[in-house]
Length: 251
Image 1 (tube, helix red, strand yellow):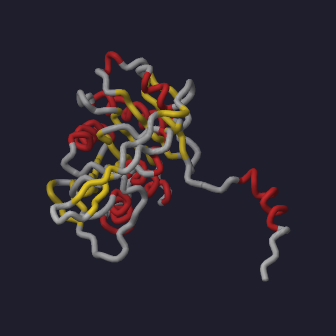
Image 2 (cartoon, one colour):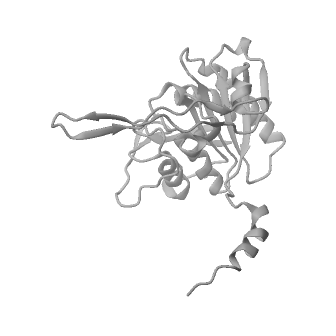
Image 3 (cartoon, helix red, strand yellow):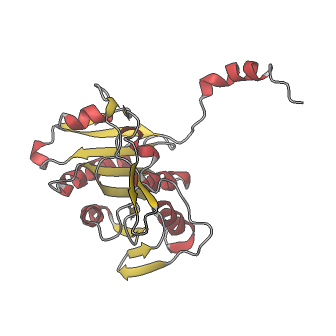
């Protein structure tokens, strides 16, 4: 089995190093990851500049691009052998609820799914104590289950693991994405020349975080696995929309 491993924290991040070692039990693991932190890059591709992919050690390449660039390059010509699966992580911090819209970690998994590979993203929530071994253990068991019992082809698994020793993890729960209140206001400052600069404010507090959500599972000591897909069409509204647009007259 050949696993393509990427992330958004960069190829030197402890999370991806832990996961590369843990996943080696399945066969070859090839790391194609950003050369630096590219958190919150979402599914952006680099189109106006060339991208460099530089080998740094056996089966590890650093890319001066986004997580999506990494996976795209890997499966469209960078690798001599196609992967069987795309794994992204372990992210240093949560990707819960609407975080997935911005997450470079999740975006790398999404790109793998676009190319037809089973794909999952894994994050260690808070990551203060650095229990990456717990997240690695969860991913290993999930992959074993996927090998024996594949899920529908459009599925991407978004996994969030509490930062606990493995012995304290209560189990795994299937969840839906919760959501947050709107983000905190931007933080305004000045550069050395007195020109205004801005920092994006912190994510908003939890809003929909009750039982059944990814937030709730992690807060209660469980790893959360949320199945997501990329069909953004609101199918149930198409018929109503069709009637609605009949009243629009284009002149």
